[in-house]
Amino acid sequence: MVLTALLSSWLFAFCLCRAQESSEGSRQVVNRVTPQYPSLARGMKLQGSVKVEAVVAPDGSAKRVAIKGGHPLLAQAAHDAVQKWKWVAAPAETRELIEIKFNP
Figure 1: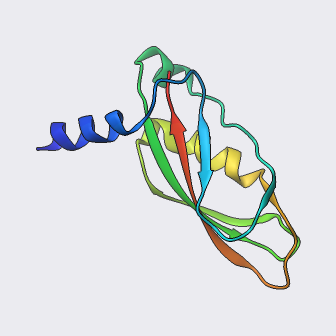
Figure 2 (figure 1 turned 60 degrees about the vertical axis):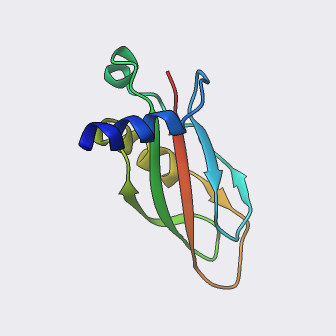
């Protein structure tokens, strides 16, 4: 059953050679930083997605970033990249849900 779930999450990703980001939040991203694909994960041909929640400050910077799911070998790279993202300024802080896809 665990293997089935793992395979399902891997099949979710498409065959691309770099990480991709999709944002489900309401604020527009003005500067996306592409995550560095971890060399160990690349060597293992590990692919999948990491779900991230970012609390974005009114000035558009990431105030807090939390991993909500995904492979541990990919999670830190996703966290580090989203921490550097910039969003359009807004009157209040918002929560943005982001999915980072990794494909070797």
